[in-house]
Structures are given as structure tokens and as C-alpha cells.
Image (cartoon, rainbow, N blue to C red; front, top):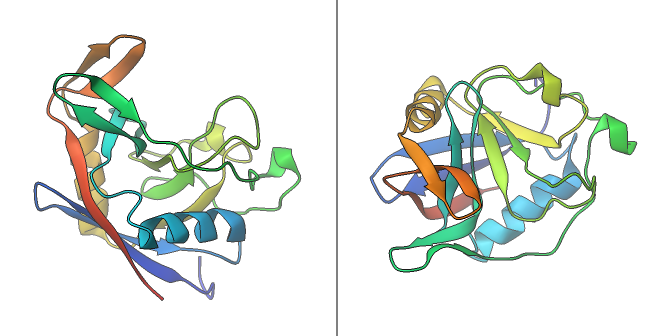
Length: 174
């Protein structure tokens, strides 16, 4: 997004990998402020990417993985969905490397969960609040690598990585 004001963020994983992000408050101010606020409050520390689909996206920001209990949800407040079908002009396309807010079928149900596209997913344009992208090719490669993780089911959840992909911390440089 040329000429757009950006906020830089970094997702650091317990395995040493890093995903650098550019966030675009001009196009999704509520989503960016929510993500930045949660990061600064260390909300994401220790959470995992709990839904991984090769050729589509990796999703995290809402669960921890506990060896005895499985996925344990961590809740946050909901925010307005910033996308066209919800009355918001957001031009960010869901291309490989884009970060977007996850939600239920309810348009204003996004909270802390987000996903990173590991392929172009134009069917999501106008329906989900994209709010940034991977800042460099190395970060996209990390997301794509995680997208290829072996997955399975646990209770009602599917596409869960067999080897947890755990966020160590998310930092923001404004």
C-alpha cells in the first residue's frame, strides 16, 4: 500500500522464527488499534496458531495449547468489522502475506484472532478486515512454511498443527 502510513509489528515464535508486519491504520484503524493494543498488553504471548490450511491461511491469536486439556480459549472484546460488506471502504486485498481479522458469521465478531494468507484468497475481499501484510519475503516464507504443517482434529476443532506453532511475543514499533 504505497504512501500509506504504516506501523511495524513483529511476531516472534518460540521456535525462533519471526514474521515482520506492516499494519495500515489508514484503511483499518479499529483493527490495527485492537491488534496493537493486545500486543502491547502481551495478550498474544504464549498463544498458538490453532488453524492451519495449506494453500489458504494460518490462524492464531485466540487459543493456547495445553498437553492435557488441548485448545484453551482466551477471549477479548469484539470490534467492528472493517470491510466492504459491513459498510467500510477497505481496499486491502487478501493476497499472499496479508494479515486479516478472523471472525464468525457475525460481521462485528472479530476480537483477537487473526489470520495470515499463505496464498491469494480473493473470495475474502470485502468480507474480512485485512489490516496489514508481511513486511518482507522472509516473513511470507515463514507463514507459508507454517501453512504446510501436518494437522489433525481435536474435539470439534480441525486443522490443528500436530506440533504447536506458539507465539513467544508480538512487538510493535510505532
